[in-house]
Length: 425
Ligand code: HEM
Figure 1 (tube, rainbow, N blue to C red):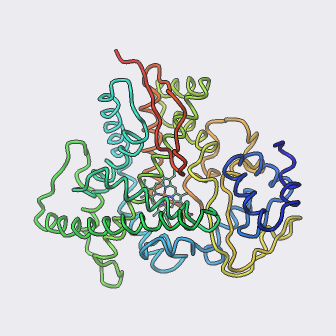
Figure 2: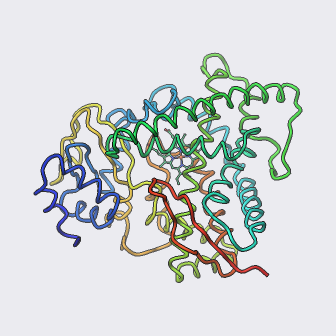
Figure 3: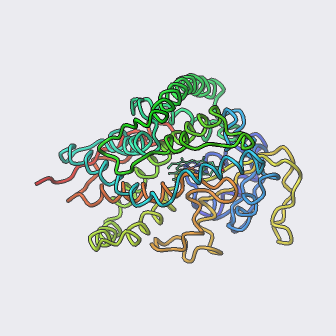
């Protein structure tokens, strides 16, 4: 399809076909489709969802949590802070957790990620199935060793994160899944949530005893002298903060859910993007050799702009709202409808990204939407900003790194298999 006739075909389609067509283009040819929308119809209201495609309008939607709410998360989360919009609980618990994830830890986090990554790759002897042995395994190790969710098998941590993420981000009305598939995902999510819940209860009981006895156990992999769950349990919270042991456990579980599948998808896709572009791979490796983490990381974030973990975020409109007011595409977004701020499209809008189709490392970090924007901006963003580039770095600096075949998604939303090889001495 040429870049200029999506809307012609869209306008000619029946109402029932319109959302299906838009959904198909989002999934199969997002960049040219969004480019045409940005130019000709920046806010596209389909019968099932609305696409908001320009940079400013995406920021506008994500800046108004009471107007554009996270209602689509509500049925997927057991009262976790992420399903709360701009209220006391969200402010309180996000602030507490940001404080626990002290940014002073980050150099040690990066070193830990480097060590864990290196060990996996050294043991792989020049051949690795990257997704399961590495992309999921490294964050699962961090969840255990830094976040402090000890005593679970990493395989289980990975599965619990996986089903939560599939259900929350890929089982929404605008995914247009057949009902039986949608129900299957909900059932898997419920099943794994029960297992996670049992684990968290047991974890908190066990770690409370340990903290009380000040008999903490440390893994040799961890260079930190504590972990996040330990910190949370060592802290005394005044009753007025409403942060009881149940809230504490829920927030510990949130750390796990947020960390694994997001990181895994980002790392696999960035590695593939750079391996497939030898010119940029060579430049990124040069930056790594010159020991310039900041420069290397710029390649990673620019690669993620082309292959982000999701093309859009999603909200429900709480009250009628005229978006892009005063422009020629001002559009009233109706209460009760789903709005998709298309962050992938916003990251290709020339109003904020010069020569957007070109790969330009070291762009202005603040314009990326890799970790969201506004009041729901990612809690783990600082950890992610170290973990993702360090994991990519450890793979790409292996001598003669090559892919045997492209990432296999096995018809699902996440990378499932990616075989790499490299030369060993
Ligand atoms: C490292 C561990 C991580 C943790 C603990 C974590 C946790 C969270 C939490 C709790 C939120 C909701 C914040 C709120 O509602 O106020 C969130 C949002 C988000 N996270 Fe993360 N996350 C992690 C890693 C990542 C990674 C690696 C990515 C992407 C590469 C990512 C992308 C996002 C995005 C895009 C949002 C915004 C969702 C929205 O606006 O609806 N996260 N994260």
